[in-house]
Amino acid sequence: MSTPQHIAIIMDGNGRWAKERGMERSSGHEAGVETVHRITEAASQMGVRYLTLYAFSTENWNRPESEVAALMSLIISSMEEELFMRNNVRLRLIGDIDRLPEAVRKSILGTVERTAGNTGLTVIIALSYSSKWELTEAMRAIAKRVQAGELLPETISEATIGEALNTAEYPDPELLIRTGGEVRLSNFLLWQTAYSELYFCDTYWPDFQSSDLQAAIDYYNRKERRFGLTSEQVTTTAQ
Ligand code: IPE
Ligand code: IPE
Ligand code: MG
Image (spheres, rainbow, N blue to C red):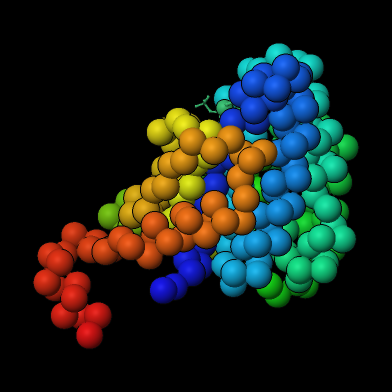
C-alpha cells in the first residue's frame, strides 16, 4: 500500500448540499470550508506531499455577483494560518490571480509568504484557474522565447511545456478526486492528469470525510498503473 505523493481534488457539490437542506448556496460553501480544513489535516497526517484543491475556476467568475462575492470572502477565511502552522503546511497558489480582488490576493499571498518555510504538506489552491487559461499562457511564454531567439521550435519538448505551466515545480498528481457526482474535469489540470487515476464519488464536498479520502487512496492502490505497458511487463519490473 502506498500513499500518492500528489492528490488533486475538484471540490464539488456545495450548492446542492445547501439546497437539499433548504439553505442558501453560500451556506454550502461555508460548510465546504470546514471540509478543506479537515482534508488538509487528514492528507498531512497520511503523508501526502502535495494536495491541489480546485477552489474557483475561470468559469466560476460568471456565477451571480453575490455568490462570487461570498466565495471571495470565504476564500480569505478558509486560509487558516494557524492550521497550516500546526501541521507544517506550505500554502501555494495556481491560477490567474491578477483577476482576484486586491484584498483577497494580498491576504492569500501573505499566507503563502508566511508558510513558505514549512516543510510538510504543500497545499496548492487553484484560484481563478482553468487549464486552458494556463496552457494558453504557457504557449504565449514559449512563443515569446522563440521570438526572442532564446528557443528553437524543434527543441520544444514536453518538459518545455511542463516548465511553462503554473505547476512547474510540482509532480503530476497520481490521483484526482471529484466529489459531488459529476464525471468531468471542468477545465482542471488537463495536461497534468494525463496519467492520473480518476476517482469520482457522489458525496457532496461538505460531507466528504477523511474516511472518503482513504477510500479514494484505497481505490488508487488497487489500480495497476501500466503507463502503456502490458500487465506482464509491469509485474516483471516491479519484482
Ligand atoms: C463547488 O460547489 C464549489 C465551487 C465551484 C466554487 P458548487 O457551488 O459547484 O456546488 P454545486 O455543484 O452547485 O452543487
Ligand atoms: C468545478 O466545479 C470548479 C470547482 C470545483 C472550483 P463547477 O461546479 O464549477 O463545475 P461544472 O460547471 O459543474 O462543470
Ligand atoms: Mg458544481
